[in-house]
Image 1 (cartoon, one colour):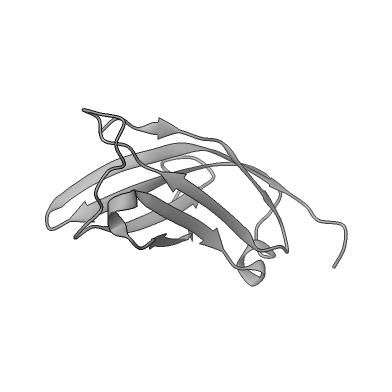
Image 2 (cartoon, rainbow, N blue to C red; image 1 turned 90 degrees about the vertical axis):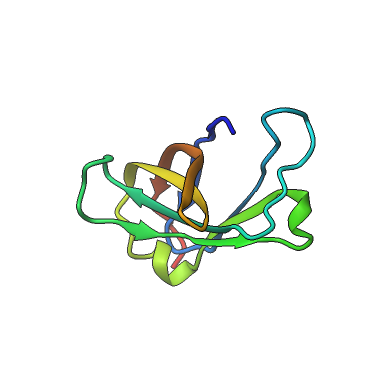
Length: 112
């Protein structure tokens, strides 16, 4: 499966959610996520030791290839404005694949 690049924007202090639809690399059909789990993190740069975890949910039916990346308002409120990098990794047994990656722009909210 190819790595999809998608840049995202998070407004601090608000709930963040983004849905990604994964496709098979051999056809335009949705990627079957049966037996897979997902994880995702953002960091200031790839080698940074400090990270923030996203929640990653694979929607039902898993054969639709949909992954929801989210972060609660209480977590986004702790983020400092600026640019970050992130990726989403899916795992099945010992197999791990990066499926989405990109930049994150965290914008400071005005309303609190």
